[in-house]
Image 1: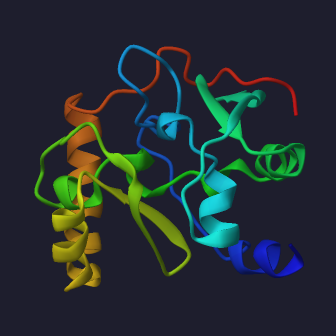
Image 2: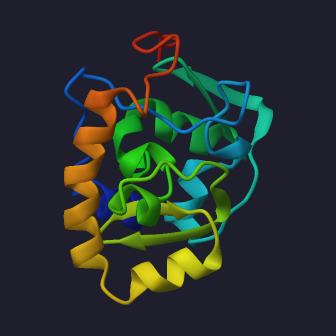
Length: 162
C-alpha cells in the first residue's frame, strides 16, 4: 500500500475551466465508473466493482469502493484517483467525440493516469501512440467542456465531509 501511495503522489489531474472535473457517470445516475472501485485500478491494475456499502459522494458523483481502506484513501486524495478526461473514452475525446458507454474493464494506466475506452479496439489503437492521443485529447477536452458537449454533474461541488 505504501508503494501505491508513493506512486500516485506524482499524479496531476487538472480541473476544467469551471473548476470542477466533469465525470462520466452511468446513464440516469450519478454513479462513477459504473460502480467500479477507482483505487483497485492503481493498486492491482484490475477492474473490480465496489460496493454501495463503501460509497462516497464527491463533487456530485457517487464513487464506490471494494473496502473501507480504499474508500478512505480516495477520501484523502480524490484527485489522485479520478480518471483522465473524467472517465470518458480517451480515444473518443482525442477524436473530438463523446463516445459514451465506456467499458470500465477497458483501461490503461499511462504515466500515472487512468484512461478509459469504449472498447478494446479503441484501447489498442490508442496504445500505438499514446502521447499523440493524449496531446490531442487534452486540447479537445477543453473544447468539449467549454462548448457544453460534456457537462458537469448536477451536484458539482457538493461532497460528503471527509
